[in-house]
Length: 223
Ligand SMILES: *Cc1c(COP(=O)(O)O)cnc(C)c1O
Image 1 (spheres, rainbow, N blue to C red):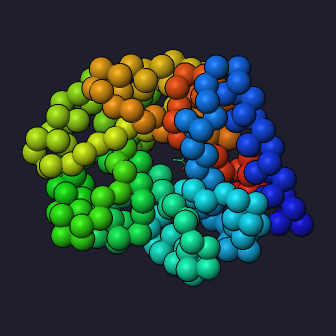
Image 2: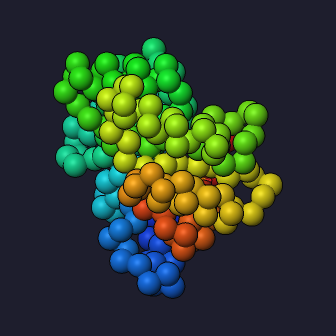
């Protein structure tokens, strides 16, 4: 049963992405679907891989480390993205395992990542998370601090930042948050925008998302 849900969920999400791209006059190849498999076991992920999906998102280093290496061994070409908060003391494991990290948001983490990237000779694609709604409980740099933070990433920590990520407040229309993220990216010369989840990825695509992070619309509800 669960397998049927995830494969048909994937097909539905792909169709919706294609439609949103068409509406926005965008080439679907410019939008990467990050299938968020957090909390789901390998048995639920396998049919999604079988249906051709190769880019997956996890929000915890330990969970990803336990789940993905065997799957990656069996299925070449898997790309793994860390979308959740990262503790500096896990930077080493994160740089070793992930192809992209969407949650760069503070100096101590930049320092740890810079060190590991140089040491391991691996360079995950990096996104700075922006707390567009300035929510106290949420990770990310504040919008007004983003430009200075991006400069520090480059000049003080030697990091190449490729894009920005945001998670809009649950109780607000996401559009203005997506627009703000796009504006900050544009004025800093960043190409990638990680924005849009199950409920709002179509509107994120309309506003320029290059990476949509979609979990429940593919895998079903999380418990
Ligand atoms: C869980 C999660 C998602 C996916 O959320 P859905 O609503 O299930 O699509 C996207 N981004 C982040 C950062 C998440 O933690």
